[in-house]
Amino acid sequence: MLSGPPASGKDIITQKLVELDERFRLFRKLKCGTGRSEGYRMVGRQVFDDLLATGQLAQAHERYGNAYAVDLPSLEAMIDGGLVPVIHNGRMSDFSNLAASLARWQVTHVVLQLPRDEAARRIRRRATGDTDARLAAYDEEAAESAALGNGDALVIDTSVSSIDDAARAILRSSGGAVTP
Image (cartoon, rainbow, N blue to C red; front, side, top):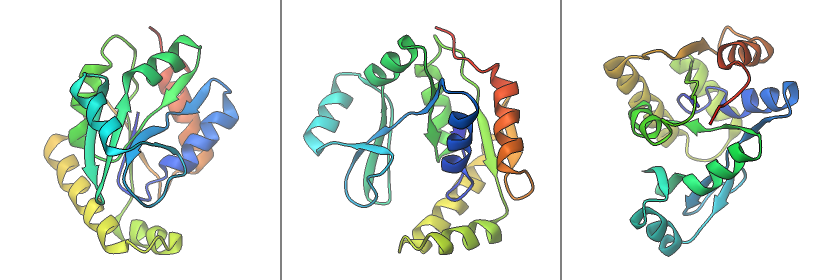
């Protein structure tokens, strides 16, 4: 699980993990709403709500006017297929709920951090049109992280660690596997 604020490097580090070990794959969360669809499995509100009501979502939250979720059937299929799913999590407060849902598997929690000014620079460079919302999410995540702490997580400052070094540290920390 890669946790961290917007622009902390979740996407690019996941790409490097996949490059270094073919078992690693981005877990494409469900998304209900508008905006960016790359990296997500888009679903309608009724499908989302039905999955939630039937207990098939390990974690769900709303941000940027959209709903996002980790669905257990897709996660189980990946693991049963010998893959190591990489779940992106933008909110520290969601980690404990998600970790409880995934207790039957080994989960490596990685917290990606970076200074706010570097996050702002990266967010502006992306030009997604929602800079203020993403900086508000950064501030929310920083406050949650300070309040909750990082527990046993591997913490990586992506403003000083290279993508290669971050990915290699994650591989070492995870043992390169998720075990059922």
